[in-house]
Length: 434
Image 1 (cartoon, helix red, strand yellow):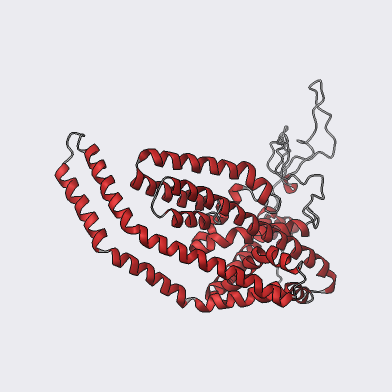
Image 2: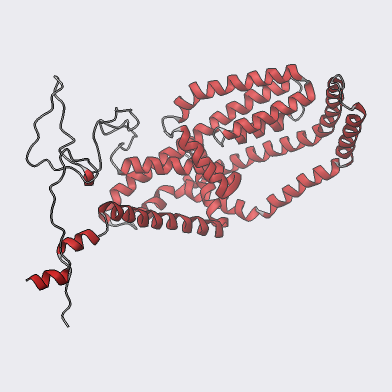
């Protein structure tokens, strides 16, 4: 029995449309990239103990590198300068932590008494509203204050249990210090070894991309630390002058929150504002609000462009989306480490694609890829492009004459009806007629 193959026209009609084939090609490639990223995230979450200390060691190295360079200028040996740098960092961090803890514990009882006075004043305001039961408000106030007074030791013990958790993470801290020491001392040699793992023809590109990534990471760490220090000092001085309890602790929280762009300053600044309202009343709270607003304006128009903007050039929309994704994946730690990761990758990609040079200067005329452009009158995908609809109009309004090669696209209306053609006979009839 002979098998009749359909003619070529039928095969063309039964073929998958080119647009669907292109979409499918894009989809499976995107799925592979997404699966790879998800696998890396799961692998990092599984081995978080070596991964997180290594990343924090890179951040500490970028932060402590200027101090190491200053000690090296004193003609100290590399190992001695590295040891002295880490020792100074430990002394500063330990001293600040001890001072903040002691001040927070001593101010807790004072804050409870001021909270009682504020709630009494608020209850007096609410009693003037018709229909409000003042007796019930007084009972609620008494229960809340009594619980805080009776559970003072519980709150402090909970904080101490948090300190126990920190002690349980001692392994991670030791790994971080160990890696920081050797990255400070032999970071250039370690990076040269990593670069030589790649093929020789791409080693210059990898070396340049690594330099750009490290430059962006160092600029973000040092610049953000300076901005965070500015926030902490300004807010701390304002709280101390207003005699707000927990002023030093709140200043340190504002300093830490400044490492989380946009969200951190808002959250911890709002906490400082709330405690000022509870302890000192509405007028000092308005003063703190004014200080926070002025402080944010100084950061946005002065500190960010000149301190961080040169190294990290990320759009606010990209920052918010990256923070959201990092917070969903890794919580507060994920939100903190997301921005330096994205900034480093962004700098490396721009170098590898030829947009910027080694110093971050633009290499292309169209380096501003966000410059707005007017939409064209006719710009379909190449698959659907047709010279018939792309003819330019003349100044007088007349159009250019049509060419014999102008063929309408598949989605375009024909000006003239298509000539009628006989339907193609089925394969059996075609064979019989022949």
